[in-house]
Length: 86
Length: 190
Image 1: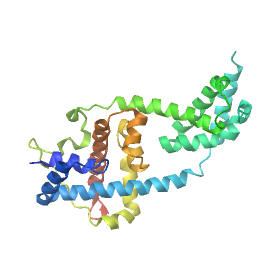
Image 2: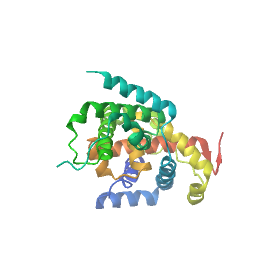
Image 3: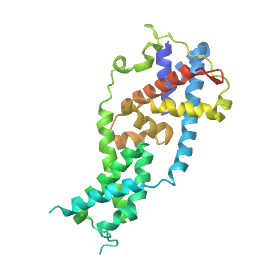
Image 4: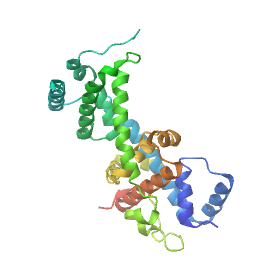
């Protein structure tokens, strides 16, 4: 019989890989009986979705990002220094 | 015959600086670190430009150097992660009792669909994400935020699937705990 700790690992891993038949069965049985693990599973699912959403938003924001003038100057200097070396 | 050629180094920063910066920023989420990486990349390119053979577009070549730098960094930090669970449980060490049942029982958060649309919730999520230990955060970010698949991440970071799953699980436990601490039934607790 799975305990909650084992179940929590499977709940997490099923977001990353397909579970085997025995793992799926064991987890299903556990979830039927354990409301805390059901809750935990809903919460991980929510976190998973919310993070993807966050990711898509940040991808959009990053599209317009530019190097600052200060950084440009600093990097330019470093490059010229490097070029000056034999 | 080489198809492409590199422009003089004086032009690199103008031609490729911002593209490299965006790439580095999306991988590190830290503008300071991203700027350092751009500088590192261009300096390395200067040392290596004699080996540029014109077979790939200059942009691709620069991005390739940057990718190597990123991967070196991530491999170093990923290796520091211990696989010994007890040693690295952090904030959620007390989640389970000795028999493996919840000691710290998950509390309800309200309606998940509604939560997903709440900007305060997503703000809290970002803050909790930033609090993850550094060595977990990049990998967690690749998988959960960028949505890269596990196989790709294992290959790129040269880690085993078990290692990856363990770290992702830790990240999720940590994040859930952080949200739990600050969120109750649809509102901030503090």
